[in-house]
Length: 268
Image 1: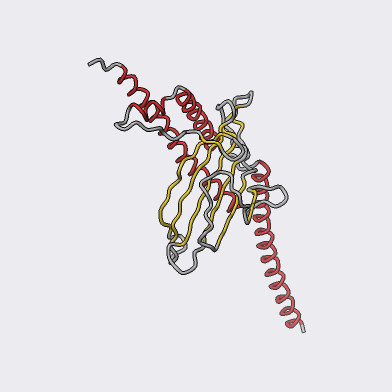
Image 2: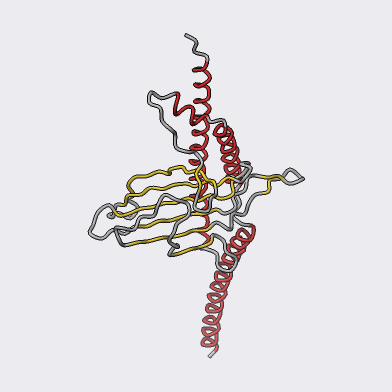
């Protein structure tokens, strides 16, 4: 009986040890999960701010302001007429949308996409930059991407748009620390059509409403955290390219201005 009692006691001891071990592991895993959730919630509360993004907004704003000054001097028109063999009128740098608001248009990369192989897509895109009335900042940025399958009997057209309704430039507090924008109000739009006669025009304001609309960091229903991070990385990557395109446009106008001055000095 004593041996039997010892065996039973040993079994209970082993079971208790196993239960304690699994309980500790479960507790440890739950703790990590809780900590991860705390970090995610903290970042969502603070927003997806990024110093580089705000710096890019500022760089783009300054260059647009310089482009506006040269545009008011008529550099682009003069260069088009007097620096080419055939007189021509250059297209306006600044355009007006359907609401009579000023914007600039820059093409984004185009080509073939193999992301959903074996399907192959043709894609293109445009960036629309809205300056403020004083041309000192940007009031809105719209990124538009379109694609359609390159083969098959049924063509599925898609358009995705990312809209930043309040792009901010980098700012500093009284203690000289950076005050960054949260970027939480970034909006995503998705359009789809299965007919060949639907074409979304190269315009910032679309007549048709989006099939799906999402907000990056909506308080009551934010997007999945990993997708939020991916969106911000893609946005920053595209902003770098836009910054280069705007700077290249400005350098072109500055060069045209110098060429016009040289032309004015040609007395022989």
